[in-house]
Image (tube, rainbow, N blue to C red):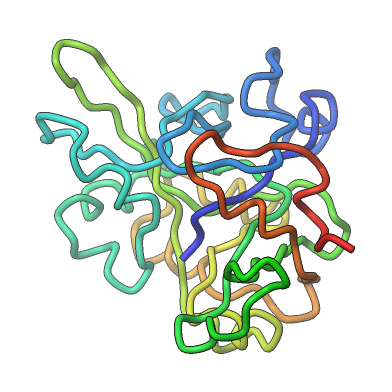
Length: 235
């Protein structure tokens, strides 16, 4: 799974990378993005890509409240075409999204959590693309009317990490990363159905990622900690 990530770039760099106008710093220059927060994403509801802030943790359009949304931050690519919350979203380019990031955190698999950091807390690792620049998680989004208010929310897709020799020793799952412009545009293409869209998904090759131990302070859930010091192990 992926429960924390970064988007440390500013609007200018993201404009250059994704070629979509981003006029606000909202959702950018973040070092510890957590579930239920508003996150920067690129969607194409009318066919033309645009940047929006979406709530991380999918709220199905038929939901009557926010309960359970925090548990729907990730969707497994193996079941996304059949699960009720996602199966109507994956076939539509207008409901697929690019969740903008430039790195993500993952913790050791449960059976390895006896290997603790110096602080005694589970050791996080920080993963980046080969050039350290922005990329996109393959994601799905939808609006839902909750207590008379429209909320747009998003979930990112995950895949089996076994093909990636860097990630697999840390965790059995990893986010679906769309690293290049061609795959990003294809993901939003309304001409692609569910099968073709899922063909874009899978574990990023080992050589496309780097990883290092990160600061266990990123573990904090309440009053989320921010800052570049989170990206490096202390000492």
